[in-house]
Amino acid sequence: TFNEFEIEQHQECAYDHLEVFDGESEKSPILGRLCGSKIPDPLIATGNKMFLRFVSDASVQRKGFQATHSTECGGRLKAETKPKDLYSHAQFGDNNYPVQADCDWLLVAERSYRVELMFQTFEVEEEADCGYDYVELFDGHDKTGVRLGRFCGSGPPEEIYSAGDALLLHFHTDDTINKKGFHIRYRSIKYPDSVRTKK
View 1 (spheres, helix red, strand yellow):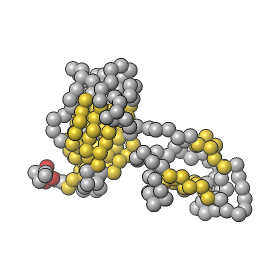
View 2: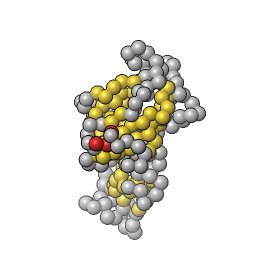
View 3: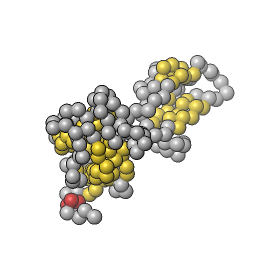
View 4: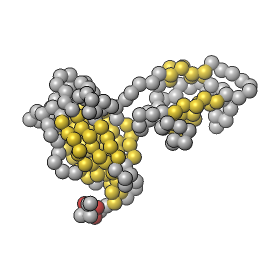
């Protein structure tokens, strides 16, 4: 999150600029190439690493930038055919999930694929209507999509599939009682006959 930003202006940011990458090096996908004096929108990495590179040339200097970083839950994750892991919180396995959390993960598959979720571990505070702590799943890119379910306790026994190429996972926790959390494996699978050909 940028609090101050003033880097030499250029339409393509060809001179002085800040590059932000979604990962641990400049080989990772780029999140932005920034310059000028307008404060950029906050940048969010899809994983737990972000790489910044600041470049300045031999002429024209400006004030620079000042930014803060924090760990956020949620994000946009790309589902691929090779399964990936999603955890309820960064300290899964060492500590219970935090209280008063609201996290949204958007899982997006490639076009003409859909998202498959497989629950490896699920321990979320139990309540009859799942009103305290819960995981809610929506078909599509946002909460206007069809709700695929709200889960707490020991969670869904079966795999869950999106109808289209995206699935939104919302994790809510209240201010008391926290449990182990969840570990979900997700991947993108071909449809429509993918459910029949499950390995």
